[in-house]
Length: 69
Image (cartoon, rainbow, N blue to C red; front, side, top):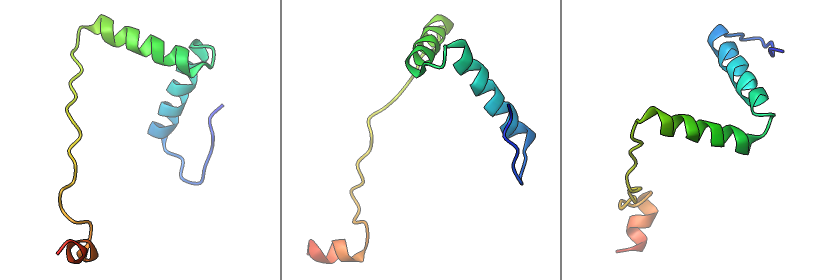
């Protein structure tokens, strides 16, 4: 069942429908959905690349810079 809204967008509706079908195929279980997704990613042979999270070194606002002076 598609949710109708004042700002109906066919692309968003298609995404919601695809999500509904994928969850239904996984029995509505998010853990099972994630397991299946990981299995598909591993079978694809594509490499998932991620890097370290960069920490922000700049002060967040002027008050921060005055407090450290």
